[in-house]
Amino acid sequence: MRPGGRLAVLILVVFLTGAAAFVHAAEERLTPDQKLDAIEAKLARLEDTQKKILEKLDQLSEEHRQLRYMVHKR
Image 1 (spheres, rainbow, N blue to C red):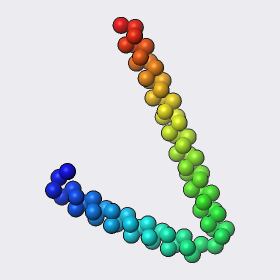
Image 2: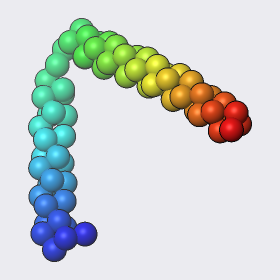
Image 3: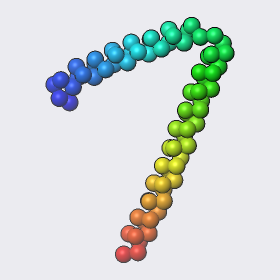
Image 4: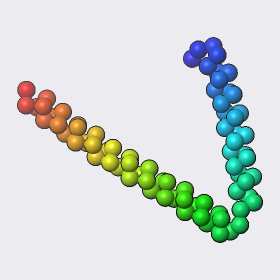
């Protein structure tokens, strides 16, 4: 790691910790309905991310299958 790299990582960690604390404090002020909406939105984002990951896994699996076929064909 470069000499300034550790300092950059430390600054990033401190910034992200502060941001997480700010978000947590904001979430504490939400009503139960707003909390439920936030949870549903997070779940929707996670499901979208899961779908993208599975699509990428299928693509990589197909590419792997094609490469194995090409190597075996030689």
